[in-house]
Amino acid sequence: MRHALGSLSALREQIDAIDAELLALIDRRAALARDIARAKMSQANGKAQSLIRPDREALLLRKLLDTPRLAASDTVIVHIWRELIAESLRIQGETEGGLIIQMIGQAAGAEKPAELMAWVRARFGAAPALALRDKPQDIIVAARDPRHIGVISLEPRLGPWWGRLLLESEVRIIGALPEMGYAKPQALAVAAVKPEPTGDDLTFFVTDWTGSEADLIGRIADQGLVCEALSHLQGLRLLALSGFVQEDDARLKDRFGTLSGIVGAAPRL
View 1: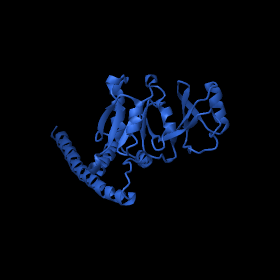
View 2: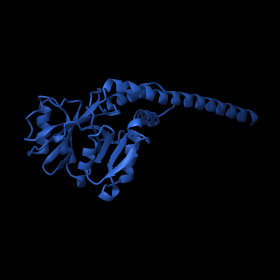
View 3: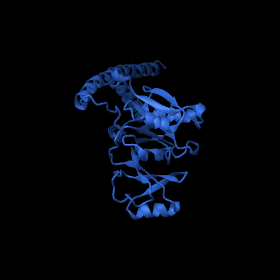
View 4: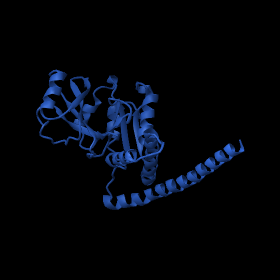
């Protein structure tokens, strides 16, 4: 019995030592965020830029997930590093007010607010501040500011808000929520960020195609693209294309309806 207790005590001492090492490393990582902020400012020449880099974050997480481990689950790896990234962004943006998540408030009729909030925090961490809006268009307008990220559900009652992105020059879809565990996106994140390819992405395409969904998907397949229908509201359709597709891709330009276009992309884990 004494031997077992001694072994347990020794194991706990090992955990305590590892915790101390982790704390020191986390603090060193966070401190580097200030140096990164200064480097970004020198490169930006005074122009405001978004703090987030969805492509770099996805590549980092995939590398970590592909690293051999003894016991840690994929879920805990993603959760820990999402929080580390969020803390780094908080520090980088502390002189400019930090990162702000714009969402539809519960009073405005958003469904499943607790579930959506859980997805938002899982993707963007606990560090960003939260602001509530009444309408999706208000969130899109706010997202023109590089300090803001909009998160809007794909629930039908909010209408085809994603169609407004065809008229936006800067705001694009940069993330699909939840990040892990669903076959289809349930909400989308938008920001004034130009999506970059990561090797495993979803590209979002809006069209006013009036034919059948099956015909549309078939015609897109004829162009060598695989897609899935996400929403069809008020004459507009939102589709997710597998892979990264450039906004000026000739396979889609002027082929599907009178109003159509790429409105962003999201990396997948």
